[in-house]
Image (cartoon, rainbow, N blue to C red; front, side):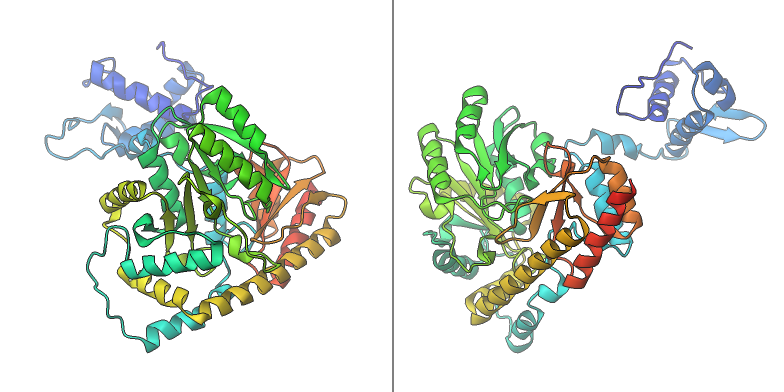
Length: 476
């Protein structure tokens, strides 16, 4: 038997072996009238663990190619071509072959652990239940009759809501727009996917911040886009780096999270914003401005967005209610040139026939009410208290072990771990102690960082979580 496993390949060896045997069954290498080699023989002949061969045979048996019978060994199924029964699809192959790539294994593990076990969650980027404006939203649904249609709504989203968002972004973000330039999306995540899938093509080069939330999104690789990085420090990215990237790689689009950036908490100053817009205009490069946090400035200061300073229509502006009201509403929006919005709207229609009219009604009534402003004011105060608590806890339990910049808004704090450590081991030890967080590798290219999010847990849990993390760090 001349087959050898590729031990450097990402594909598990048992899967490689299963594929080799399946191919051999099809081309006659393994005749249908003879038993297949025994598990023990194959393991010895190929210098493999017997468990590897067992797993390969399990895979082939699950799709109906082979049969195992005591006394007669392993044989090729007599019904391989489905004369009397149907073959089961090899779902693992379909999963691996799909063009839409899965999240990083570490990210999948964090999500699974957070859902399946009772952990102190310093990883999730959503608000805690007690920060949701439940009372105000319940008042809308219990005291007002829904008079809208339960059928499909306007392709760009409910017109009343788009009118309300037009007024909202003018007052709170200084953005001048109109309802025809707005598309309602299922949160900011769908907005990003629509932009990538509709406005870019395989081989295009884009620039994202490093570290950034976008670093963790497989959507770019899924569609064959080349990703290049803009280093971020406590003052955000450097516009000069953008010019350098363009000269080297002919960047087609820039993705930025300029306000209390995820994960660094950095805030881009006006001078840098002006420089970015100037570069965008000179080179004709669109800027995608992702803004989930600008309303959470602890100073109460109104932040000028790139879109509010955009005079040439170069900026596609994304925002949502997920990080400031409730993630479960799934209300986000894109603001951009009408022609672009119409293109994205058509794609959204193909995916889901438009957004839920019911949640759009709730979002509209809440955005229009004074209760929205009461809620935001309360939210800012509560987030600031939690920010202060996590800083105090870091100084108490991790003094001289971490470095960080104090965020002035948002929900994240980015920490550099000064002690040498293995990232995987640290995460495992932390989970054992009942706390979860985002390892730096899931958000950026540099080693030795972690992101703690302080919006999901109350102050006592934040303190206990940092304490447990410190115990995990000191144990390795």
